[in-house]
Image (cartoon, rainbow, N blue to C red; front, top):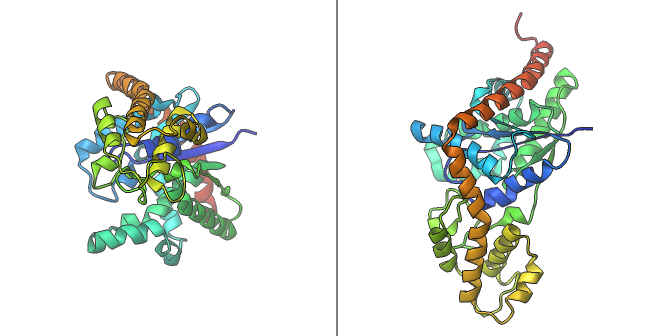
Length: 329
């Protein structure tokens, strides 16, 4: 039977190679099978922190263009903007009404971010997982390919589905999470003990998908390394392990083969050749992205079709939910 697959990325900051390797490449692989694939630009999640409205609108189109440039085929997958389907926020409210505060208090991301934001922490950030549960459960999703940091939220979606089903009958499916656990651990080029992130305060730590050739070369050239001279992936060499993982995942060359290739080679030559390989891997994506951004009519058509498809699916689920809850006339 066809499987329904759902995932999404926020249109905030710049998408980096961790997003590409850890999430989007999984999505591309899943297109090879006969599945219903739904990929969302999750703009409602993005506004849990202040966004410039003009920039946000630009980023929404940029993320959609990047999905396609990276290999998401609109003929095989449905791409849409979260806020254009109001069923997401509607179902999130219903989930708010049955989700215990204790469940949301235990969310690791909320605890980490609220420590930084303190009194400015929004209710939206607290309720973020309920909206994510609505995103997933609206479509009877079978598989959710996400980064490792989102697995707790998918587990919560299952708890919410279980509680709703217990209260009102079997309405929601229980989705399974899919994580490429090795790819999900791409680390900062400047601190190999910290995950590569869109919000990294040091821009040298992150390789963005749209970085130019010169920027990529500079970032890899200035990437931290470990003591010694061996170019190997080992627990005591976190920096080299991270660089080899990036090199391997973007080129398809195994880490073992890379270790053999660079045996006895200095860090300088290794970084130079790695930078060339990374740039060659990302250049076709940059070129396709630039082409797409000159034809926003096509991008909007893709998003319109994705919106219409998802609404046709989610409307049926919302009608079912309203009936069992007792809403409406």
